[in-house]
Length: 409
Image 1: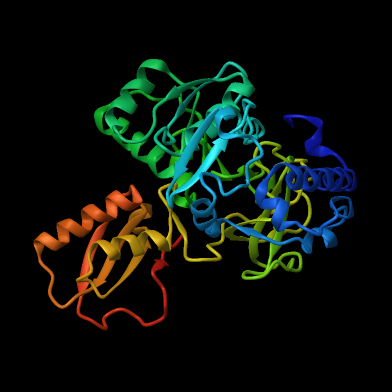
Image 2: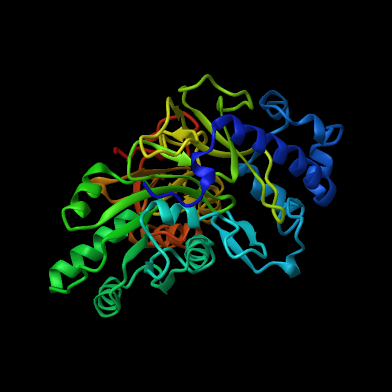
C-alpha cells in the first residue's frame, strides 16, 4: 500500500499527543490574534487545553451563526487572524458566508485526499467544481498543485464542451460532484466521444449513491469520496478500502450531541465538530451542522486515524444541494420578496439519483406570472434551479420546517 506521508500510519497515541499540543497553541494564537476568540474564549487558559475533556468545555462556533456574526463584524465575523488585504483570495458561499484563502498553496489540506484517490505527480485533472464565488474549485486546485498535478478549470455546466475538452486533452481524472460526472459520461456516450482517459475521480459536494459508483466503475472510473466544507476544507476522505472516511491528519474532530457541545459515545450519531490548526483562519470547535458517527476499529487500508461513517444528514435545516448550501435564511428572503405567499417549505429530493428542489407555497390563488417570478427568485437567491408548487392555505404541515431533505440514498 502507498501512503501520502508517515503521519497516516502513526500510533494513535502519538497522534493524540500531537493534536493536544497543537490545540493549546492554537487556542493561544486565536485568542491573541482574532477579535472573536478574544471575547469568546475570555477566561480560558490556553495551556489548560491539553485533553479532550478540556476541549469539550470550550464553546462551539456554529456554522449557521456565521451569517449573523459576519453581518455584525464584516467581512469575516472577526474569526480571521490574517487581514483581508493579505489574503490570496476571498470567497462568498451561499448565505452569504464569506471565507478567505491564506498564503499557503493548500491551506485546505486536499493533497492527501487526492493522493488517496489515486492522483499522482504529473497527472492532469479535469476540475468541475465551481470557480464562481465559492472556494470549491480552488480547494481542489490547491491540493492538485501541491501534489504536482496540472488542472483544467472546467467549472460547472456546458456539458458538451466539457466532453470535447476531455476527449482532446485526455486528463487522467476528474474532481467535482458525482452527479455531474455521470452527466458528462452519459453525454460522451450519446455523442460517441472517447473520454476513456478518465480512470479516477475524487468527488464531493453531495452524496455518492452506490448505484452511481457502480455505474461509473463499469465504465472504468474508480471513484473516491471526500467530505469537505468551504470553511475548513478536507475533513475526511475515502481510500481504496471503501470502508468509511478517514479523518484528515491536520484536524481535531469530535462528534457531539446535536444542540449541545457534549461528545457522544463512540458509534453514536451526532454533529461533526472540527478544530483546525490553520493560523490564518483558526476555527475552534466549529460545529458543521453535519451528522456522522465514528466507525469502530482501523481501516483495512492501513491508515490509523479514526473513520467517519460518512454524511448521515443535517443537524439543522441547512442542507446541501448539488454541492451548494441552502439556508433557512434564504427561504425567508424569497418569502420577503413575495408577501402574497403565506408559508413556504423547500423540499429537496433526488428522483433518479439527481438532486431536485421544489418550493412549496401556500397561497390563496397562484398563476403563471407568480410561478415564473418565484422560480426566478429561487434561482437568484440560492444560485440553483428549482421548481415551485402551490397549495391552499393550511396545505403545509405545521411543524416549523422551512427546508425538508427527503432524499433517499
